[in-house]
Amino acid sequence: MSDIPARDTGDDGGREAGRPAGDVYDWYVRGHQLLTEGNAAAAVQLLRRAVEADPASHSARETLARALFDARLYEEACDAFAFVVAENPADDYAQFGLGLAAMRAGDHPRAVQHLSLAAAMRPDRHHYSTALRAARVRLEANGGPVREDDSDDA
Image (cartoon, rainbow, N blue to C red; front, side, top):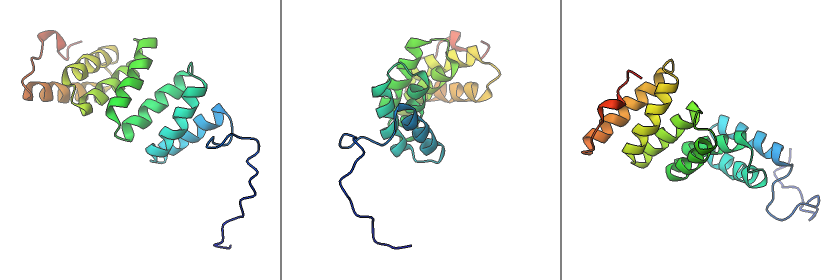
């Protein structure tokens, strides 16, 4: 195999400059694959394209939110998860993701709020209640009140 790159013939297959090959589904699948492989920053780029092209895609939005979180873009992850939560407040995973992203962004009251909801919706998910306890500890450590109605007994 040669180390010499192929010649750029200028034929982009009719794509606009900077646009990845394929369609929205291809971008989503490749973005999901990149995220799974641990390349969150590259996944964000493709998944942003997919969401821009198909704003109604719940899967693309949720996967973008996960990629933003893994890329340590916590404020943007909060926004992305909040969008999913606004569409479906009963989505325990989106509530969990929003809570974790808020905790990493330093918004501990918001973290406790959303992690409490996630833990109440799915008490069988022990990582939800573990994250909630961590958020409560951080909130208390930062001088914030922890309400009694935020108990793990949901």
